[in-house]
Length: 56
Image (cartoon, rainbow, N blue to C red; front, side, top):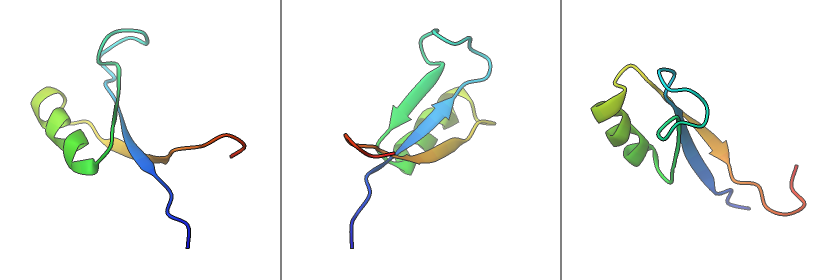
């Protein structure tokens, strides 16, 4: 069984693309939730797989 590495992506809708903190990427749900609790409590994180060379 292959283990897929995932990351958690948070997008702050109050920020514009390119702004610091518009998008944050975390290695765990706990880290994402802790960051959001302080900055955007109404936000959410999405779990995304990390793609390697040749992956689609």
